[in-house]
Image (cartoon, rainbow, N blue to C red; front, side, top):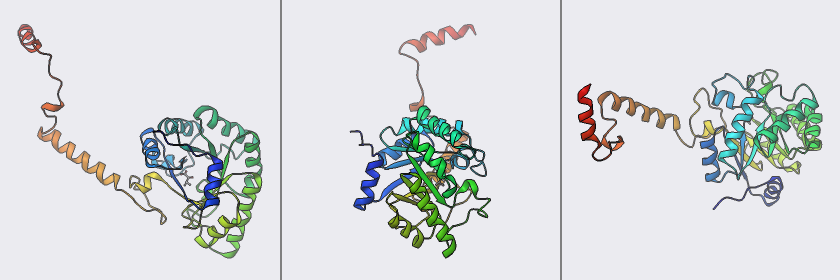
Length: 284
Ligand code: KIV
């Protein structure tokens, strides 16, 4: 039986009822299928695909075209799950018009349910413009990887009272601009808890502690596939890198020793054909 797809009003209801929202990233068809089968409420096709799929050092080189292709694959794998496309660097920074055009591409070309963009007060006009075009928007504040250079690296945000105040102002601005979801990244639980309580819209956490309305993790981190670095907030639920590497080692070994393939992996000739074949190859 296919699962009932949750929509934006369902997330508002879950917040009111105190049920936590479970959210993961996915970048490809098979992982999206697993996510839907496992009962994820939402999937983010994050620009983290730059690191997790393409091996870039940051999210900065990721393009709209790449994001669209991955959103299409995820949509095919998870037709009954709320999918968000992540606006990559320079897809919304230049102007409201360009932001609307790119947000529109996500919907038209890959049928996502919402888009996410980074920034607080400084992206208010972008959020309003995208919303006016009829697109559901998720804000993203705290550690915003696209501007990590300005933040002094991949560092937790809001750890002083003054920087926590700036985060609260950003959170209020995102809500006021009309965003219907907000993601807090790498923020102390004390601050995230206050923001979650203060805002009417669902507030999700990636490294912002347990008091938010739901949690997001990068799938490649939580299944133990991405190995370059692991943020403090990640819990590993599996060791995919270990399992896959071990499987490949065994394969190498079996190919070298001839243990693979065995008879059950072969397509034999049809009955009676082998005798004809033996006769036929005598000429050669
Ligand atoms: O791209 C992504 O996966 C993200 C998360 C880090 C929140 O934006």
